[in-house]
Image (cartoon, rainbow, N blue to C red; front, top):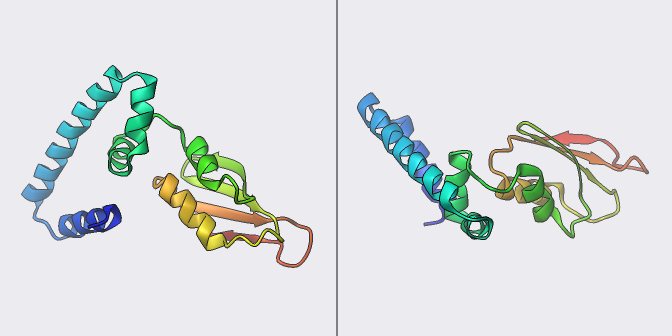
Length: 139
């Protein structure tokens, strides 16, 4: 089962769970968060980067606000070679510029941002103002 499928299943189960089950899940989350905090505190930069490179571990680090790589860097790395320019990262918003003629799909760019930084809730895309198609799209 993929990571996204697992996360979706957990969220679905929690939505229908009785309060004691939700409390149990929160207690486990808190315990695992404390353990991850201790691991990351003991890790050197190389180990922290290797841990963050694993999709499942990276998700757990993000869940506990422990990811060693900041949002902007993760987004820029994910967009390298796409022609997209990161204009701003403000809270849960990422604003990007895409050239009109680069052939990039706005949807593909949004997916790349969300894969690299799942905590981002809004991706605003500004097209270069050099012709037809200039404008903003927000999701």
